[in-house]
Image (cartoon, rainbow over all chains, first blue to last red):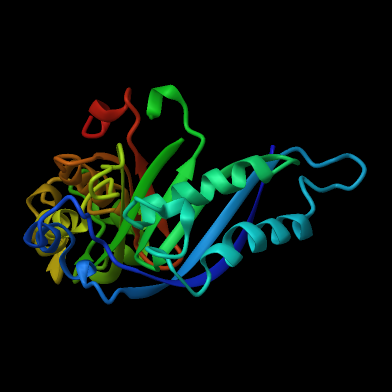
Length: 140
Length: 144
């Protein structure tokens, strides 16, 4: 099996606020991320596909195809957007790195027709990232 | 679907690779310049990976407001700007290789109460890194 990874970057704004918490609780749990004016990150997304190279093309999947999928599913939805207001898939969720990465996994998984989506790694900053993988029952 | 969160931390420390179990000559042969009696130092980076359910109320596996002070207290404060061989008790009897440093950091971080420690990765330099992964069967072997 071969794994191939493509990287993209997008920039977006967010803030953390749970409407079922009091104002004080929101500040306590989310700290400065609770600032209602929002703040932003340069997110870096690494998408890994696993599979066997096609014997004719030598490719697990056509990277051009992956590039187009990432453009449609991620860039157009999230780049230069406010994640609290402009991404319907995140509606009702706190747009943490965990939730954004899980949404990206769910958007991409059904679109990958050659090979399988193996891992989504989303960096919020060079010091913080979230990995999503298929996992299995034993490790869930 | 399995989700994990990784946060990177940094500390700078000195160490010397040397063991009383070997003769001076053997120490020099095995550890080379790393055995220089005055020690030397590195800018270490520690990656801590935790896993567990994402709390629907907060959207988080672990709140960094809890994780950061925990790692600060357990690892950064005791290791940063220290001579590991003498100032971290565990390395008085154990060679302060980054394998052992990684294992000691894993041991300290696995008591994080709010999520399960999955992996510790320590970069000794930008070229060398060391990793320990928890697996259910190996957890107790970490200090074996």
